[in-house]
Amino acid sequence: MRSWGKFVNRVLVATVAASLVPLLPSLGPLVAPTAQAASCLPNSTILKTTPSTYALPGGASVSMWDSGHQSNPLNETRVAAVTIPRGTLTPGAVTAPTMSAAVTPAAMVARDPRAVVVINAGHFDPNVSGIPEKSQVRDGVILKATSTRINGIAIDAHSQSAHPAVTILNGRIVSSHGSVPVVGVNWQTLGSGVTAYSYVWGQRAHPYGPRTIVVANGQVISIKRGSVGRSRPAMNQWWLTAPAGPYDAKLAALRVGDAVTVKLSESAVLQSDGAWPHAVLVNPAAVVGSGGTLVSQGVNKTTCVGRDENLRPRSAIGWLPNGDELVVTVSGRATVNGTRWGGSTVHQFAEIMKALGASQATALDGGTSTTLLIRRTVGGPLVRLDRPISEYQRPVVDALVFRA
Image (cartoon, rainbow, N blue to C red; front, side, top):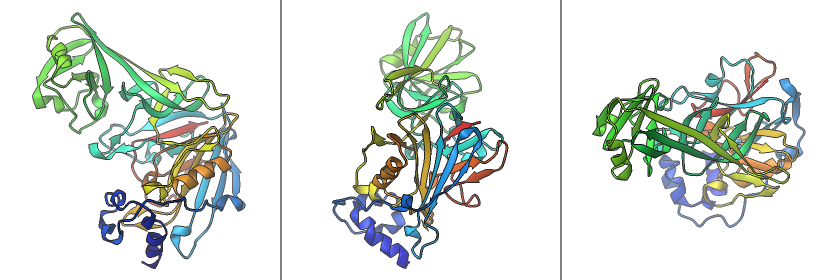
């Protein structure tokens, strides 16, 4: 308890108590209301020590900095950085089989012997039982998307590279009654248009409108009313629904037997950085959600207030000026009430990414989700870099994979 008390004094007192209560409800009484931090905690000095290094298949390499055991485990820091030369390992996305049940990154690639580097990717939506918070595309197939601009990581199969991007769903339903916009695929809320649900949503009930049109093989096969529309679609079906209003009225014109075409595509607006051209990638090979920008054009873009000042495990992907990719985690050893602590603040993590040479860096999910795995040989055993492989691995919604 003495170590935890030091942590409260050093870090949590510099946060807004209200932002911590949802995160650590059982520790609420320990945290007194205070003002936000006036300045950042000091930057980590871990990168001034000598790292351990080794090579990976495909030209990638690992560098590890580890403070070792400290009397206060919250002072322990491990930075694991994998450098992937541009155009060497092939990036992609791996996901849980459905959105109803997350799985660990290790399980996602257990039968994928060419997966050399694996890192947890997008955040989950805690308000909808943990489904992916943002868009998800795997092997060119749209699993989850929205017509609202949303940030993520997009994979360009042609250049074999990952990019920070803003992704946008382009979709329409076309029938003899006209054309209606599709504004969401397996999305957690209904928007101003039609939302389409498929088998990959999983067992969990999904949002529904007054009616749900069931389409299979390009034809309406059923019309479901009210809450019956919350059920799971069968394989190779689209369940189309909209909130009460003009788009539901459009769906009301459809009849069993009508021919219906569901047209979907995804656009990724690649975010420029220095010499990188600003471009639009149509139908990227993969998309996962991402967090906020840590570094842009070599500038730390983070803040030092609220939860950002907590020492937590963190994950990120970054890019060197020459386009080489960096996959990085920072972690610690302390665990309190099942929640991992130790690692770095958000601002410190951005400084670490800069020190590693990143001119651009984007956060991935962090905290207990942080997991970085590698294979030292193709087909070899998975080795965990952020923590020992024997420790608990949190099931997550998706991961970035780099294959030899």
